[in-house]
Length: 138
Image 1 (cartoon, one colour):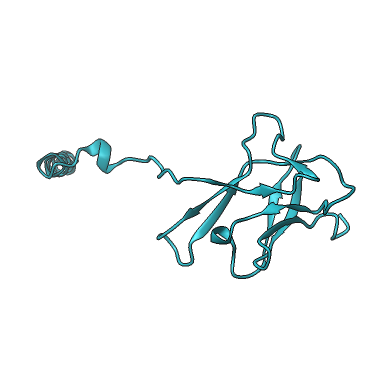
Image 2: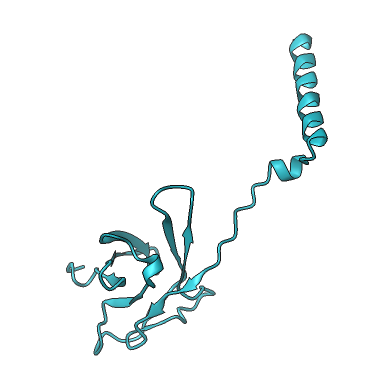
């Protein structure tokens, strides 16, 4: 057992020496900080939706994570609150810019309020974010 502990101690010493000799500090080498990506706004259908969803939520925004997988991944964040279901297009939450648009329809589930969920469809033609819950009879 002491032999294994001694080998482990020597191995750890070599690893630490490598980091310092190479100019890499262990704090930098083992960093768990996520990269920061610039975000862009999602243009809401202001006739039916508001970006003031309350409860400390952020305004709807998106960012693209590039280079990790192909195709790139677009992340949506923030919250919106439906203000009225009459007039306009109440199922249209908003529009993404062409840079965030998928090349096919993407259906996904989003968290709503009080532990409930809704379906949304993201379409490439008009880059719409549409609430599909009511259209599906839910």
